[in-house]
Amino acid sequence: MGRGKIVIRRIDNSTSRQVTFSKRRSGLLKKARELSILCDAEVGLIVFSSTGRLYDYSSTSMKSVIERYNKQKEEQYLLLNPTSEIKFWQREVASLRKQLQYLEESHRQLLGEELSGLSIKDLQNLENQLEMSLKGIRMKKEQIMTDEIKELNRKRSLIHQENIELYKKVDLVCQENAELKRKVYGPEIIDEARRVSHISNEINNEYELHGPINLQLSQPQTTKNNTPTIMMKLG
Image (cartoon, one colour):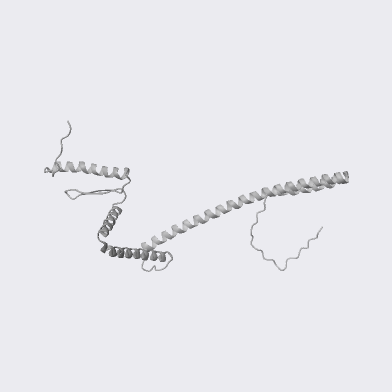
């Protein structure tokens, strides 16, 4: 048999009333939670028991839900009473001016101005905020410099490879020219072709051995007046 229909009226027995309140309160909170999840709704639930105990549930924040409720009710009231619209916008302007004043004051404090009215705790919070901002700026700067160094190293490697290929092409052209001279002028030019090829190979091997040259800046050294002048003899 099914359950009988319950008459909706106040329960006289205090024990039964408390048990019913506990059960239905749990069910109501469960339904509110399910509604907020299933329907993506912003739900706020407030329940006071007969003894004065508070039970509440909020899908986001009870403060934000109450503020949204008050704002919505105020807008509805303005729609019904157009004469109150001026007062509403006056309050909005005053609120925006207050926010702007707070932002300007915070900006001046970040610049190190108007710090006389701050306490030790406020100054400590301001210092921590500046340190966090400076840390983020330094991290971003280091990241940009690291990326630029990687890009320069990549370009240097490409230029190095291109130089090696050019030296190989120069060597091949020298060999072809020597071969043409040998065919034109005879076998006596073979020694000259070998000498040119040997010099080209030495240049190529020297470049491949040492790789690209890294330039560094060094501190200038002071010269003494009594240092003798070294004459270089050109051979």
